[in-house]
Image (cartoon, rainbow, N blue to C red):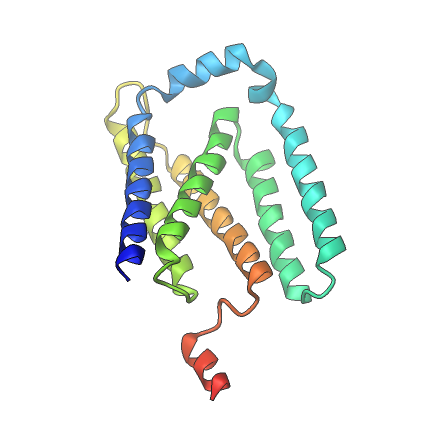
Length: 194
């Protein structure tokens, strides 16, 4: 039990440090993005579309080859998550820098999941992940409102939240792939064992 507590603490320290890093980079991100876009213009203007297409094709092939025993609901949920990413990337995010939110909040979702999963084994974990990442996304914009080189934007909050929801959706896909019964209520699971 003591080792588990230490692991949980370390994971929460990583979550808090990453969250702090998000906030600390707010004043310098526009300058860093400008430098990156001048050094790697293809990555900031469109090369990532090919990478995204490749990931979708590989994941789809993986599902078709290895996922023959999955229910239709699994495929519908997976398709919905990828469709959500497509809409966000191609229709909602007008500027390449906005697409960075997908990575930024995707990593945050994974870190929060790792901090919570040792203690929470029910679907409540996804609610808590969304609660934490939504709070960070909102605070992110509040801090930008106070910075002279940044602006508060409700649209950015929506992008942060959508990125959090989609990353949580991907976690759900991965969890149901690895352990189809993971989301079942503990009480229902215990009743079956009797």
